[in-house]
Image (cartoon, rainbow, N blue to C red):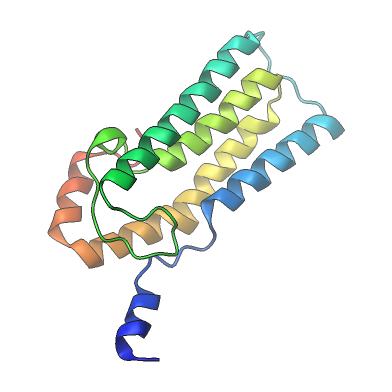
Length: 159
């Protein structure tokens, strides 16, 4: 393998896990816990509110993916990032895909009247911050320097 090929293989954030796997695991555990040990939401929020939050999460996700594709940025965390995308949902959040994942969990919790999804969403925030976001931010700071630092100073991590 040439030095160029080795450098390309190392040109990624080196995240601890792939975020979609965390989402699938969280949702699976949430539905399992809801079935085994029901834990209702203390207030009676209409299921429609949960459905609206799920729809919002999906809209943010697809808006983000579209923005990234138009900005020629890679989406998988194990691929090199060739561009800093600052338009679309990236004007409001540095991590809109992860935000949509958390909103999806919260929306499902409201929709199904299960507090487990809120607990798992909180855990997901911690895991994403530790295992993915901080590593991505270090990678982007090293790769793009002042360009990323300037963006980071203007836009919040979550919202």
